[in-house]
Length: 522
Image (cartoon, rainbow, N blue to C red; front, side):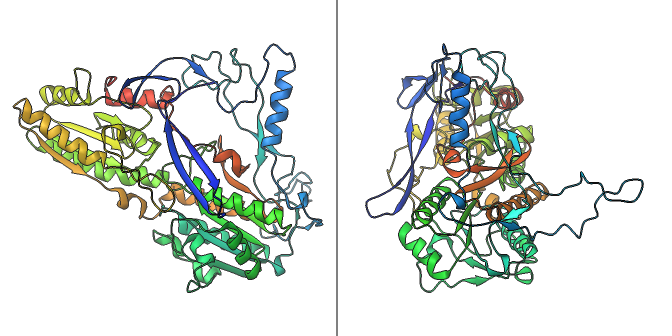
């Protein structure tokens, strides 16, 4: 059981009648009651999400739940649809020194490979009550049920002959810190297996059907220093293409593996490509690497680029603080990325320690009235002389006129809440006859175009390596990530059901509220 968020952006992923991939978002209020326009007021009641229909009076309900979980999290494998025999791995461990015992002989227990039966726990906290902060329970009594997912890493047996493999890498969607790190590590790990034929597909899925976009040969020399710069060495683009045409191109190029770097929409495309390859009984492994600066992919601790974005946001927040603190009745306003998830804004506010108001899409707020944001800004000016506000781009969209336009990925084009809030603050202080000096900073593209920091660079290295290990292990239609500090493989459909959202009942959001000192804006 999980307490419903104020808004639930359910991801709509479908293939239209032309076989074109389309991804979008729709908005609905769950577990909340209408208060104003599209704002929703929290009603504390439990909502079960993404659970099988279970009769908790049945003593075997746990078994039924675990069977359903095991079915959903079983990893698709090439051997499900074609006959292919494994062979011993070529991923050599000879360059590493095994442990020796006192007599000088090798320890038999030493092993650098992952067993196919290794698992990691998806959930590691046993909640005593559904009212515990951030409680995620299955039944009303919060019973403990083990949920195991596949551990990532190199296997002793592989399902491809490395000398014959042609591998492709494609980066889709928008830019994100760490893309080049992942590309580089995939190439280095493929070569460690013995793969000689590695290519990059230019500018996302577009590279499969635009004739003038040729393959980019990749090797250690080509990618050696690409991690020293931001952006994508292969280029990115949004928008879908005919899945059938993409798979036709994969066949024509004789690709055996395709590594797809992208977010929810890109993973939906990768899963559709995987399904078409299975339908045609092709020996092609499709493996995703989750890329989203917003950190909004389900089940994962974090995605690469997020730490770098939070760090880069500090410079904007610090600048806004200095401007606000130095001005008479100064008000600093910073808008950060986050269409449906406020993780960047929340973490940046927490790490800054200077933010007075943090506004995210998951927690509705009112602007006007005695309990509104504007009245609290007025209070801050009265008491401390300045104010600092941090807002996510997807927050407060109910106050703006909707265009219903979408971008090439099918995402709703958002109106600028930052500019709107800036104007509202100025007009509010004019109306009450109080001077204000508003400084608005929007560092959006500065956050995603920078080079990955050390934390993200390590994460990218691990994800790139595990993606290759997963492909050679014969898995397809999977993605790799970190779950409760462990590296795991997950079936793509389980991570693209909805975007991951900040839980307003979580300890992290409570910590943010404690840090900012802001009231409930209801």
